[in-house]
Length: 475
Image (cartoon, rainbow, N blue to C red; front, side):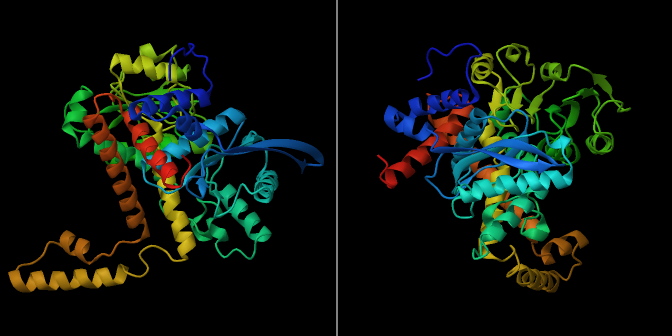
């Protein structure tokens, strides 16, 4: 299924499909069924006018549903100048596979608006977003039951709040209106831990990888995650949270950061929080005082390091630079950062790649938690937290009575503290990423035809999707 692939000639959608084809071959899926699974169910293209400072501007947006074998279909909305139909459809396909890998019962969807958000005021962005939302709602591409967006590149809690409010006003009878989007502000039905979820999920993936000595040895590493040299491309939401956690909790050395206006390098480790604060204040990394600046930021993808984490946009590692990559391990925090052609080269070189469809699934996992919470109309832990604290207090009293010994303060604190909503969200995310890795590793270990994590991930996903299609009588 992957023969006759031209060099660097594939679109994003074709690249995703060719990666999936490897799994279809391993599973011996009928070509017709494979075509049905790969096909995009529907794509909506809208053009709408908005009055911006007395001048009418026409905006173009898309919302694609790749699969509705599970409902609602789920996927972010991005605002960017690179958005087009092919990108949206490719990202929707990735969402289908991503949800299946981590056992989130959603279909795959994605949306995009062709816009540069930096050129518009907050008031203008609100008008544009609300109008885009109305187009999607009225055409059946946004609702808590069938299609649920989330933040993506160029969007965040602010945009999700506007979209949710627009849906509420169009459908005041829908008691579950809050579930029409995820990634909302906490005060408006959002979930603590959602903003950091994708980046934290990346870290949970790495921790689980390093818990398996055979995986570590196969990659050429020794020891644990601590002390590993890491290069991050993109210090946006995902890259920031992932690198900050790796630095502060796992004692990794973040030796390089690649941004759109160059890169920062420091062999003994960059201060992620300080750099983030500098970017927030100055809107650039230029002039940052405590690191060396490299003007050709993308060249740092080939920097000597242990772990490379592309966390920006698709198509960053191609056939042109794949041969120069020095990292032993590539962790795809972005969607589609490695093209199909580059993936072939890196596989032949023995570079280990943890794929996007699994690695960055933390966002949709916690979005699922938020959606469930919105439909349940009750926060996690509300019913049981104080009961758990009371039981812990009773256990502590029993220990003191039986041992007649003082209990260390940190043990007392842990025993009598019930889990709050953030604790439960992080626990659920950690459990999801761990169990998914174990499923992927089981395929890798048991099937002689699978020798890389990407193919194993797609095998896990497509096996579940094909069984779902069979169960509902699609074939």
